[in-house]
Image (cartoon, rainbow, N blue to C red; front, side, top):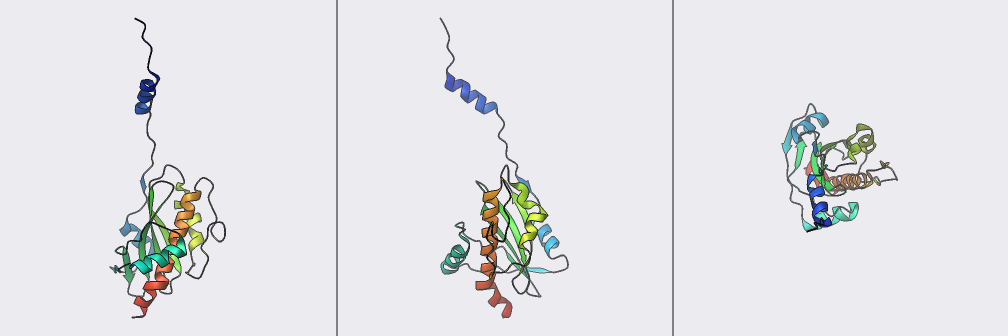
Amino acid sequence: MNWKPNPFVIAGLAMTSAPIVAQAKIYVSIEQAQKIIFPNKVLTKAPILITGDLQDKMRSASSIRHPFQGERIWKASDGSWFIVDEVVGKHEMITYAVGLSPTGSLQSIEILEYVESYGYEVAEANWRKQFVGKTASDAIKLNQDIQNIGGATLSCKHITDGVKRVVTLYDLALKQAHSK
């Protein structure tokens, strides 16, 4: 009897023994990000209801399809805001936090969790600094006022669009909450 290996069985064995590379990385927790962005401020949880109309307006401003979660919003007594959001990178979710001044300008952005196997350069401070001072009236567009990172294009685009959605949220809903 002459045995011939089945190529599908060999390919299956090779795939089961090959390591799956994924670099899930938690950079900072929500509490740590709050202390980094607002080191001397007490933040109070301030969730808001995201209506369908508000979700649609945020979506048209940013092109992000993943729904915004209104329960991850905190407010400081001076009117500053700390907002946690998530967007899809290439395949996996990226969780990030944004600190907004009482006037709605971006003070800082922190990457909380990045699960993609590449493109992690979006967590580097030099790239994130591009967002500082931006407001809803700014374009906040990749390759326009935000530079791309080669090899991380989708992560850069989606975080950029996510930041646009957060400053739009401030402009449409949170700004009125501050004036009350």
